[in-house]
Length: 308
Image 1 (spheres, rainbow, N blue to C red):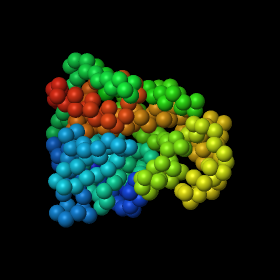
Image 2: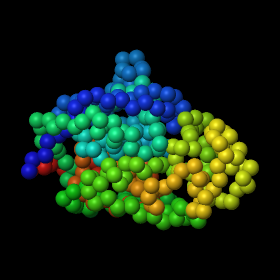
Image 3: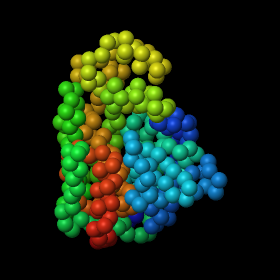
Image 4: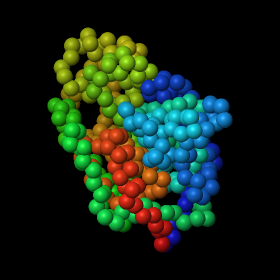
């Protein structure tokens, strides 16, 4: 059965604060024609420059994936790209009036909700896939990272993380079909270790950070006074560490939510290939740098097919 390309039925907006810049702004998804792909438009800049959401435009992967071209950048795009792929959106124009995607709760849930509200429309053009015809792999020994993709009739992932920590050791998350994304992957939030937060704040990062837009793991025993100090930095009430080493302001949606979030990140980063993939991904200790380097490697080897 022939699959058709899709776009949104009507425009829909998401407002919020950028995680690192702290800037408040609005992002609007607009319908786009067949073969348009995903493009971001910085409407706050002179000339409203466009940036194609493609792997060749990745310019940074420090604590998030950033793309840039035509003198403009958009930071932390991975959760939006994952939502677009997870909802099978092939074509969209994403207008944004700041340089960073709203972080919301650190997941893709709010972007998925917006796409559902807008509705999805089929277009009069066949969907094209990147079809994996041989095993492709990458290793980054210093990070103990290995990612491989092998031929498959659908897109599926098996992702394992290991922070070699008492509170966050080895976890695995599996997605057998993209249809699972909405319910099982999109709500899964990003995470951070408590000792990282003060460093990030002191280095002028996470200006828009909030103890509610990440799962916070406490890897080392800290005095309550230090936890209180960090809570004060985020203008939050006092919090404590629960039995599984997580600040008690949030509860996990899934026991392996961190691994599921890393899987979510991979979906978003791999969608920068510009088309959906048919292949099975196995990843050990992935991250944005490894994901995007892997996407570049795939880009060098791929063939594009229609789904007949």
